[in-house]
Length: 146
Ligand code: ZN
Picture 1: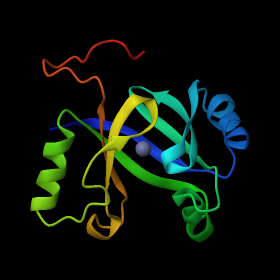
Picture 2: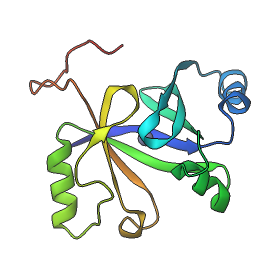
Picture 3: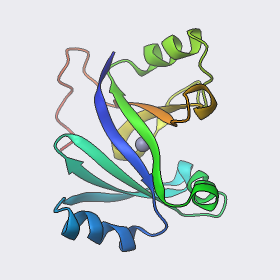
């Protein structure tokens, strides 16, 4: 089941040029910069009342974010829904006719399992599902993270 919007992914050219806007102009606190090698991005996270902002900077010319910046420029890249059952969520989407980018979830930033739906099937919004890796079926998840 989808629990809430987990984060908005925003494509930027340089984290260092963008972080001051979120920190100084908006007053949000950056709580972590992390490289996700599999996706060829560096990420910076901000918490806005439980929903996170995930800035994405490409680390290679063939990064998906580099391609996005080339064609669309900086801006909102994807929306991520937090789920307690990422496999079930993918199955539900797939069975209803949505094309998946990832049939199998992989490890994204912040120790989460993530998978994307294809934007051609999602009315223009690149959509991510994410689930805490140390998910506890009882609900709360264990508190290793944060
Ligand atoms: Zn994301």
